[in-house]
Length: 119
Image 1 (cartoon, rainbow, N blue to C red):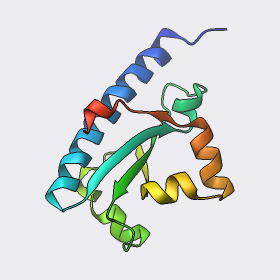
Image 2 (cartoon, rainbow, N blue to C red):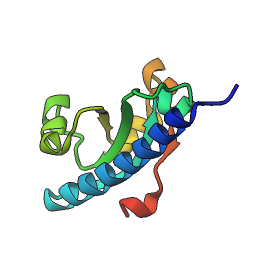
Image 3 (cartoon, rainbow, N blue to C red):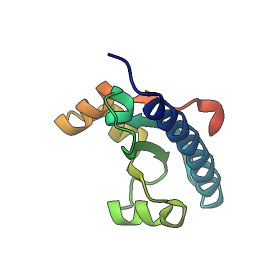
């Protein structure tokens, strides 16, 4: 059974919003001396079991933040956030080398956002 047109349209809009958000994050990172190394959509939008009103779950990989706790990482981009966008911020090393079940599940379902959007 296929998705309703409205749900498909919501996915297209979600991908546009995610791309625009990632571009802003990349710029912010550069301003603050960090570098966005990768961005992924995870959750229902990545698994394609989303509903029309599902939020957008994003993983951001940022170099240079290893000494920042979770709250300080979020503070880097808090003013860029908008309703319906949830973010998880990791260093590339945390993302690729962690053996936590949480990150292993996220990596399994993650869909990369085009690197040209933040390179």
